[in-house]
Length: 94
Image 1 (cartoon, rainbow, N blue to C red):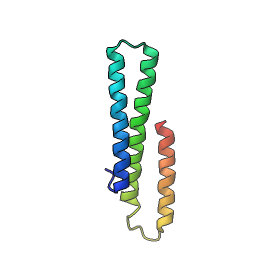
Image 2: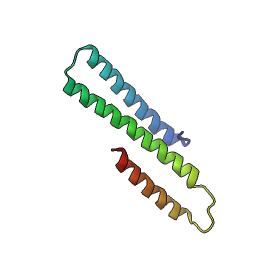
Image 3: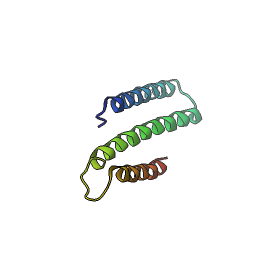
Image 4: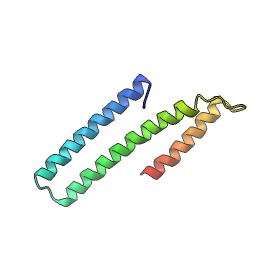
């Protein structure tokens, strides 16, 4: 869960966009929209939820491991390690 006020604001903004996308998808299904446009909307919705998941995961990793007391490991080194993990995860999540 995002804990800083800015992280919460970002998560809430993303959730509102996701809700709007889900509502638009529902309306499109009810209207009998063709499969192609529906699939595009579903892909956009999936991308939005994946982006939210990545943000929450990033926040969680930084909170959990960024503040951990690791002997001999400076904070900038831990931040760089977390950055690398998140880069790899974002690549995987695409």
